Length: 378
Image 1 (cartoon, rainbow, N blue to C red):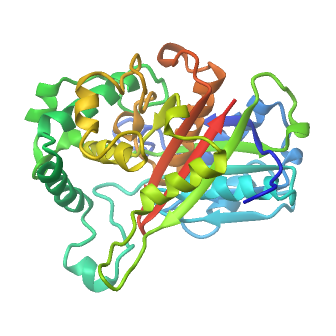
Image 2: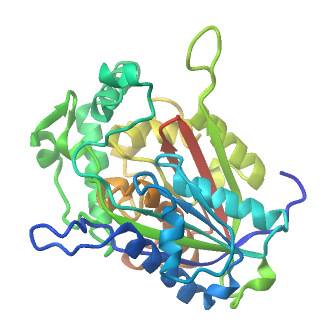
Image 3: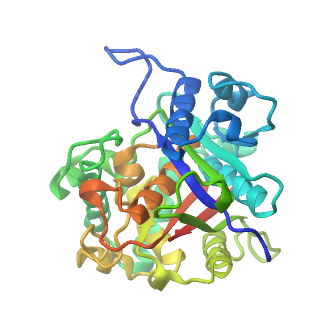
């Protein structure tokens, strides 16, 4: 996308990720309650009014028809176009990409991307496969990840202890994030002794599901109410899988989405100060970092052991706890990743702040499959 106008982030909003099902003393809140709370927080953060917003792009997965309309109705229906985006776990990044394009193309000057979810209980029942494949169990996510994990272990020499280290790192980071669902750190021993879900993956290798809401306001620079510590959307890409006659999986869509993002931003992996990697299962963070170009295949476990991806390391990863600690409300997850990068770049991440962060990357995947990347910079 050449000759696009600069698009900047005016404000962000996020709720605490938790279970809001009204059971066992927990509060009952619907997705539109969580989404509208996040939108209002973003407006407050930006110093804007709802009438400043010219279009809305709303990501969700399990919220049904017109979920964006139901959410924004609680803020105020002002006649603006409301576009509902369902792209599995990459719904939020897909919504943000649309917002970025609309501002960059000068169609609108100020728009909002929102993500929200009220998750069904139990293992995710993905419908992103044909019925016959679902009946054979192809859409059982832990089993799918387990097969990928076994192959990764065989190809790289990664161990179950390496995967446990990912959980430990992210749960430690999450203990510094008041919006994370899981606030308690865990040890390697606790991870390795948790019950087996799909060999070699255990209960604490899996991210917790959650309910939650997120929102990001994107605008042209002249619409900002404050020009202090401006954060620019340098890139927002989305790529789906490749099909070839030789094999079902051709070129890697994660790598392609990252390559496209770096080219769009005029930057490279070496320019990133902080990363939000997709860790719905802890091994996924390792191969994610490799496919995104931050290290070669098989290097991520070694770098993890050396503390390279720690808060104090050379490339801090999932500084807010990631999916593993923050939780995973599908429609809200990707924007939560973007919000963490935004706060890190502005120096607003509190005890988990990465010193001198000026650029960062967020990556989310979704069934389809989809791979979305957003790069933010000062």
